[in-house]
Amino acid sequence: MTHDFSVIELMLNASWVVQAVVLLLIGVSVTSWAAIFRKVFALKRVRHLTDDFEREFWSGGNLQDLYAAAARNAREGSPMERIFASGMREFQKLRERRITQPDALLDGARRAMRAAYQRELDALEVNLSFLGSVGSVSPYVGLFGTVWGIMHAFTGLAALTQVTLATVAPAIAEALVATAIGLFAAIPAVLAYNRFAHDIDRLANRLETFIEEFSNILHRHAGVAPAGH
Image (tube, rainbow, N blue to C red):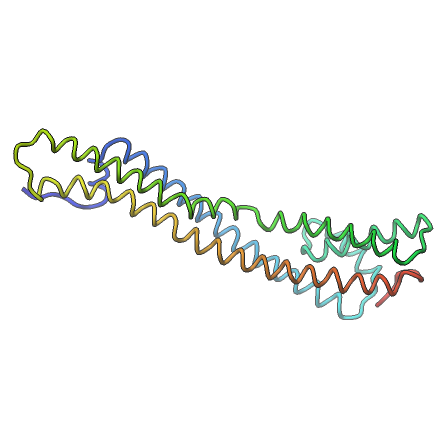
């Protein structure tokens, strides 16, 4: 007697619990791949926008002109551009209130930039927790399906008077498919999570450095109207 050991045939013959586990893992895998591709393109876009704004900022342009452009481009701009706009906005509001102490002006602008920085970081980290959960939980979900399938297989074999490798192999193979698909879902998610976390950390360091550098520029302009730098 020959057996068809293709994955599809094995799944058709598996118990409903194993089938449910495999379908769940396939759905999770498809969702995680969609999240991975979205994050790849999103981070690539953010890097390009950040490079463009940073180049423009340090080209020696006028701060007011940069602020006006950043205000118009709030939705489509880079995180660095929005952080810059937050700092300038708060700086100007404090100046309009006739606050002239450099430390007070700088402290208000830094608080506004820090708040904007945290919002941008939260936005960049969207879907990271999902990928981390997929990477850590999927192998165990697959293992659950395997254990259940093996238990089901041995329960069925208990009624047989003669057990050979040919009778055991199909049931064991059906169960092991769940573990294989669990790993298939987990490995890309773990690799993507680590890569994205590294890229976001590097971008976060750039944003923090910009906050410090821009704070120094604002400190120099605290006693005069904010103009070019």
